[in-house]
Image (cartoon, rainbow, N blue to C red):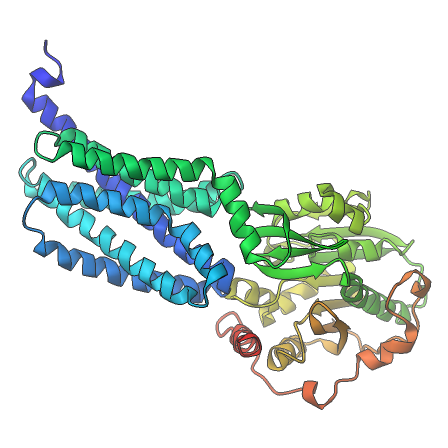
Length: 521
C-alpha cells in the first residue's frame, strides 16, 4: 500500500497541514468569543462603544497574559495543547448562556464578564505559542511563523465577517453561536488527539474531549428551550415571542390582556398605555401644520423614521387627506412582525398593509440624503440615544440634512426621552435642533409605563401649541383642554443650557447615560 500510512513524509505533511488549519480555527473561535461578550453586554447594558471598548481591552490584555504564561509550559506540550482546547471549548461555548444567567440572577454581571474575558482571553493567548512549539520540529521556523500568524489573522477576518452576517441571524443567535464556536474548538482537540495518539494518554484525552463535545452538542440540540428560559429570566412577564434579528433582539412579553415590546432589553411600548405616547407624538404636530395652513384638507405626505411597530402609522390613518406615508425602519424583522404577529397587527390595525404606506429598510441617516419627495410631516420615533450609533440620529448634522426632505411650512417632531429623569439630555436634543436653525416647541405628557415623556416639535416656520384637534372624538387621551398644559415645563423640568450634540462630541449620549444610570441604580 502507498497511502498516508505507508509514506511517512506525506503523512507528516498532512498532519502539519491539519495543525496549521487549527491555527485558523482557533483564531476564528477566539474572536467569536470576544464578539459574543461585547454583543451581549451591549444588549444588556447599552452603549455599544463603551462595552466593546472594555471587552476588547480586557480580552487583549488577557491574551498577553496567556502568551507570557506559555513560557512556563515546558513539559507535555501536546497534552497541554489538547487540554487547553477542551477547556476553551467548554468555557467559551458556555459564554453567552453564562452571561445571560449572570445578568438575570446576580447583581455582579460586570465581575462575571471580566472574569470570563480574563479566563478565555488567557487560554486563547496560550494557543498560538504552544502550537508554534509543537510545529517547530516539522517546519522551517521562518515559514512556520509566517504561516501560523497569517492563518491566525485570516481566521480573525473570517470570524469578524461571519459574525454579523451568519452567527447573528435569527436561526443562529448568540447562544447557538457560542456553542458552535465551542464545538469547533473541541474539534481542534480531536485533530490533535488523532495526530499525536501515540504520544499522549489517549483514553484520558478522548474521554475529556467526548464529554465536552457531548455537553456542547446537547446544549445546541436544546438551545431553543435554553434561549426561551434565558429570555423569561430577563423579563418580569412571560415571554411570548423572541427573535434575534440582524440588528437587535426583539421580545414580546404578555401581561394579563396586554403585551409589551422590548428591543435589546429596552421597553418600547406597553399596549396598556401606548396610545398616550403615540397620540402626543402624531396629533400635536399634525394640528400645528393644519393651524398654519389655510386648507386643512390638502393632501398630506408623511415620513416616519423608526416606528416599525406601525403604531404611529395607525394614528395617521385617522386623517382622510393622508396621501402618502413612507416608513423608514432599518430592521425588516420589526416591520414583518408588525404585519404578521396577531397581537401587534391588531394593535396597529394592520397599518402597514394600507396601500398608502410604503416601507423602506435602510438607515435613516442615508435615506434623507436622497429625497424623492418633500414631506409635510416628519416623525422621528427613534430609540433613546443610549449609544453612539443611535446618537448620530440626534446630531446637528442629521437635523440640518433633514431640511432636504421638508416641504415649505412642514412640521417635524422627535421623541426626546424623559425631561424629568433625563432633563439635561432632553434639553440637549431641543438645543441641538434649535442650533440647526429651526423654530422649536418642546412639550411633554405622562405615559404610565415610562413616566413623564418629552417631545420636541420643530419647523422652519414659527410654531404655536394648537388649541384644537380635528380628530379629537377618535382619540382616547388627547383633548384640546390638555394641549396647553403639555407645553408648560415646571421648575424641575425647565430648560437648562447644554452642549450641542455633534457626531464628534456626542454630548447627548453622555448626558443620557449619566442621568438614566443615576435614576435606575
